[in-house]
Amino acid sequence: MVDRPPFDCTDEEAARLLSFSRELTLAPRQSLWHAGDSPDLLIRVEQGLLRARVVLAEGREYIKEFYWEGDEFVDFHHLLSGEPARYSVEALEPCRLQLFRVSDLRRLPLWDAWYQHLLQVQLRIKEEKEILLLTTGPEERYRHFLAHFPALDARLPDHQVAAYLGITPISLSRIRKRLNAINKG
Image (cartoon, rainbow, N blue to C red):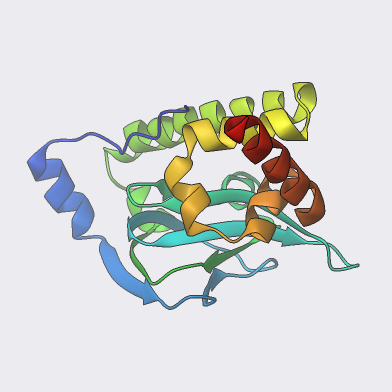
């Protein structure tokens, strides 16, 4: 499993950082941002589950990532290029978030260390997912998902798990039936 540790800092540094945050609650299906927005935000998930998703013109959805309790994330593409977000972030459950404006954080001495931490965590997550998508089939991807994110499988509808794995809901259903038959036999 890819480790998703929060940024570690002293109590004094944490208090200083929190002075720059604001709390936001989202109801299920409420968006944090939409594709085309310019999110100047670092988000820490205190409670709940969100998805980052891309919807193609023909309506097919791909889920880039899920974010849950303890995760910290930014839109790196926007942060590095200044271009609008290419994906939306939406609550799947009631969420309580801490939001930090990146423009405020950049003025803090602690920002470089936090940014380095965010890059390292995201790089590990992206490398693992990229290798899975390039080198494994749908069943292996689903087995990996179950092994590394068992709690998420129970929190998500089938079509969202399928969209994350890059397969159709029908394929996921067939894989689950096959695995259930193996487990029973």
